[in-house]
Amino acid sequence: MAQNSAYTVQVEGLREFQRNIRALRDREVTKKVRLANKAAAEIVKPEAMRTAPAGKRDAKSNRRYRPGKLGRSVKVVASAKSAQIKAGSASRVPYAATVHFGYPKRNIRPNRFLFRAMARKGRQVSETYEREISTLVRDHLESE
Image 1 (spheres, rainbow, N blue to C red):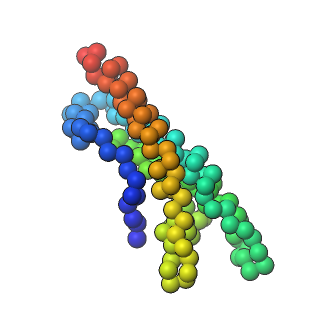
Image 2: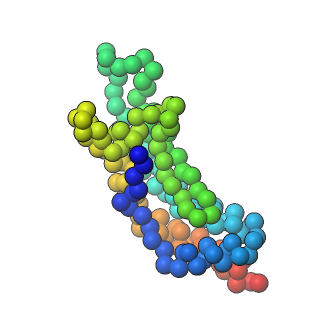
Image 3: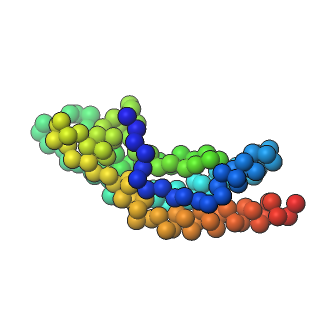
């Protein structure tokens, strides 16, 4: 069960901007928008990697368990519409959602390191996004 983040960046006029970009049907502009989304999200990645719980290996640990895998699994996925910071994968780090959202039946408390990283870097994300999109508009759209 996926949950949406409590921390998001809202951009006024974003839907209209995306509609206009799609109407242009220009692959270069779409690619630049995706790169702007990715640049904004990349700001959160180091903070999320740093604050991800590393865990520790003990006598009861599974042989496959490697401390620090959760932090190394943090990645950014960007499209022309959005960017997301994700952690874990079904095959390599299947416990990521359990660590992040908790599991009350097993007495595992949530450690919302991704949300905290976004909260700490939110202002920088919005500034970067605004700068990147303004540059894109100035270079590609206003010159035509």
